[in-house]
Length: 481
Image 1: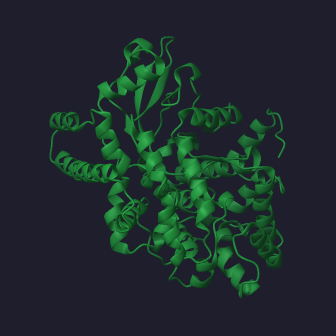
Image 2: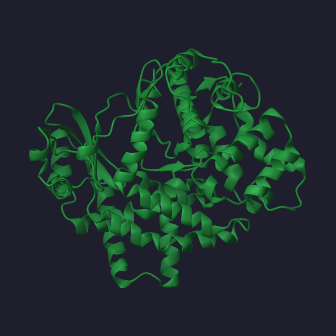
Image 3: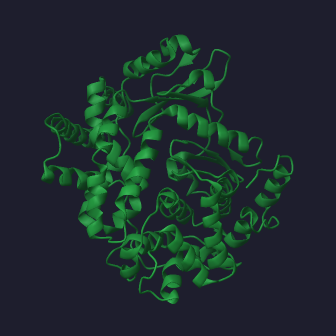
């Protein structure tokens, strides 16, 4: 059975920045200095788009020349280009991208370009950050250092290196000045989400903004990311198919994060593998997400294609732990009660009481229990029955639209629904995880796999990966859940 709905797939996330900039401009709240940076950032963004177009028609040697010519060489360039083109609003847009369904199609199309890789900073500028953080230039800190980055993202770029004791490592270096630029932009985030109240009367923007701000600010401190990654690496150590690179503590600081160098195929290659391998990859990601949530109570909230490396047989390496959310027992208990009421007991009256108690819906709204089940039940469709299902991109898209399409078939409940703080990052599943599984067209009996991962069921292994994981779990100390 295929989970398939005739709904257009939403455009790429990240579109909220332009909307916010326009709102701020109309209200005249941007300082003159910030306005100048916005102008420079816009010009830099246009130049970067032109640069990418030129690369398409260049040979390898010419591409290297073009890339070198376009490198960001000063902190001012970084702040201007990334602080406004790829900064706070892009990060918020990634996390809150399920709101994109409410934006007009032309706006989403215009903003899709913000999801392209950021232009890299020069090797000299990256070396300066390493020297400032670690006390010596990278050539002295490491036995070997590659000044050419292997990846560039929204707030930092990654270099290969070899430590003095012979370990191959990945060194993530934060763009200088980006922390200050993003923190300044976050001061105005409330204006954007406050305006959404006109579309979604049930939305309480204050707690939503506070939660998003806290998570973004955490991403800017690599020491926090290192702590999360250490926790996941320890939990999954010696796992038969899930791998988290080890953190090199002595070479990590607030703006430099050094980890074991991992290898593997990227997501775009995996989608070309045969279906059996894609199924194993999807199952491995599914197990990682929900075991981390229900057993570790720490959720890696950024399921996007660039954060994984794959090998055959369901072997997956998980990268980037900057956006994590730790849940307390009471919050995890709420998630458990919702699953038990909707999926296991089919007690919709009880499910409604839970979502009203946590603030997803206000009490006393004029919706029948059947309407509540019809709306929320979709999010549990793939685990309601013990049957083999294929995830699709259309199912992921329907999930997004059902939650936040203010003009859709479920508009009344959509507009009345709220996003409490504990659900802000967890909602990334609905876009990130489902979209990944949909692109893989991953097929499995998701209910039986979920039964293994839910502590309140603790079912027997149902697949070969499940049996391998059970053998690994038998060697681990139990975690108090």
